[in-house]
Length: 72
Image 1 (spheres, rainbow, N blue to C red):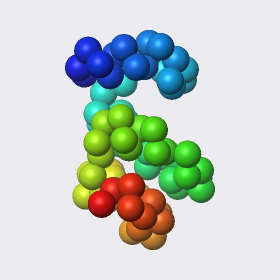
Image 2 (cartoon, one colour):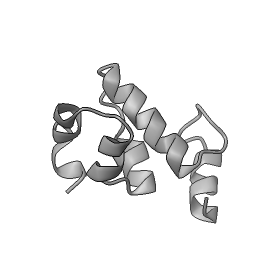
Image 3 (cartoon, one colour):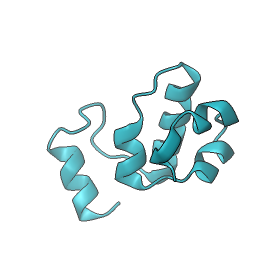
Image 4 (spheres, one colour):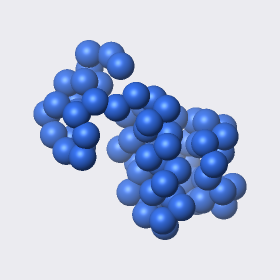
């Protein structure tokens, strides 16, 4: 994880965790989407996640499509 991401997480943007890898971020996004929680925008933009990564992580196509223009 780069310095900027560590700094952003440390400043309290996401108080849920202190250190997060890219694979953990994908897993967290997938879990939130499966629960129906669409509050994943900060993680997707922070890590620059693609729709393909989230789909490979186990999210449904409909959930990923629902994120709209966020994923391009």
